[in-house]
Length: 495
Image (tube, rainbow, N blue to C red):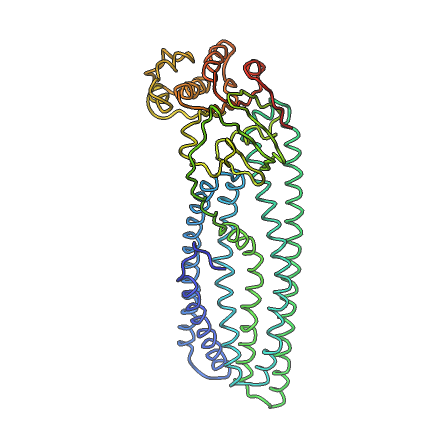
C-alpha cells in the first residue's frame, strides 16, 4: 500500500538493493562452482562475499532509518488527526501511537525489503539456469509458483486474523486507559470491580485471538518450508543422477545445486516476514484513514434566551436513541452512573463531539451548521478538571470576561486575585466557576460536577454564585451531590 508517511524514494532504493543482491548471488554461485570444480578465483569470491555482506548491512541501515522516520511521521499525523476528529477515545489513540506504530517497523524493515528481493532474485536465477541447464530451469519454473500460491492462501487468512487481533488490542488498550482515567469516579460509585472484570474479559479474548494467529503463522511457516524443501529436492536429485550418468558436467551441476536454493529462499523469507509485518500493515491502514475536513459552518447561533435546544434521536458512544428537549431558561441536572453518557452529552452541546446518528438542534437549526466560534462565544463551560494557566488568579478569571473581581468574590477567591502559587483542585474548580461567572453574555451554561472538589462551606458559596449565574439562562449540569439537585428545575436520569 502507498502511505504518505513512507518516502516515495524508499521503493526505488529497495529495488536497487534487490537488483544488486541478485547480481551478487549469481556471481557468488558462479565463482563457487568454478572453485569446487578445480578452477581459481578465490580472491574474487572473497570480494563478492564481502560486497554481498556490505549490501545486506546497507539495506538494514536504510530500512531501520526509514522505519524510524515513518514511525515519527505516523505518530505526529495520528495525534494531529485525533485533534481534528475531537471524538476519538484517548485510549484508542494512545494504543495506536505507542504499540501500534511500533508494529510498523517489521513491515517496513522486514517484509517490504524481503518482498523486493523475492521479486528479483528468483527471476535472475531462472534466467541464468535457462542458459546453463534448461531441465533444471523448467523444474524450478514449475515448482516456484507453489510457494507464493500457498503464501497467498495462508496470508489472506492471517491478514484477517491479524486485523482482528489489532482491533481487539486497540479496544483493550483504549478501554483500560479510559478506566484508569475515571478510576476515582468508578470507585466512588462502586463500579471499579465490574470494570476490572470487563478489562479482564477483553484481555482474555485478545490473548485467545493472538494464540490463534500465532498458530496459523507457525503452521503456514511449516507448509512453506516443506514446499520449498521438496522443490529443491526435485531439482537436486535429477541433477545428481544426470551427473552420475554423464548427462551434465560437474561445474554446471554445482551451479544448479547452488542456485536452486537461492531461487526459493527469498520467497520463503518473505512468507515468514509476512506474519511479522501483517500487524504493521493493519496499523498503516488504520493510520492512513484521514478524517474528512469539517464542513465550514457559517450560520449565526440563534438567541439562546429564546431558542429551544433539542437532542433528537442522538446516538454516540454510550448514548443510543437519546431524546432531550431543553426549554429556554430551563435548568436541568443530568444524573446517572459513570459511563452513562453525561459528559458526552455536554460534549455534544459544546460541539466537541458530533453524533453518529440523530442531531442537536438549537432553535430548529442543526448545531453542525452553526459557526463554531460564534457558538462557543455564547457558552460558559466548567469541566470536571479545569485548567489553571500561567499567571495570577485574576488573569485566569479574565479569560472569561473583564470583571474578574466581582466573579472572584462571588466564589470566595477575593483574597487570592493576585496569587500565583500552584492552586489546589478545589481552587482551580472555583477559578473555573468564576471564569464562567465573568461571561456575562453567555446564554447557555454547561457545568460538569462544578462542586465535586469542594467542602460543604465552599460548596454553599459556589451554589449561591451558580444560582445567580444561571438566573434567566439555560443551564445543563452534571450532578452527583444532592445540594446541586435543589438548584435545578428538572432532573434527567441517564442509564
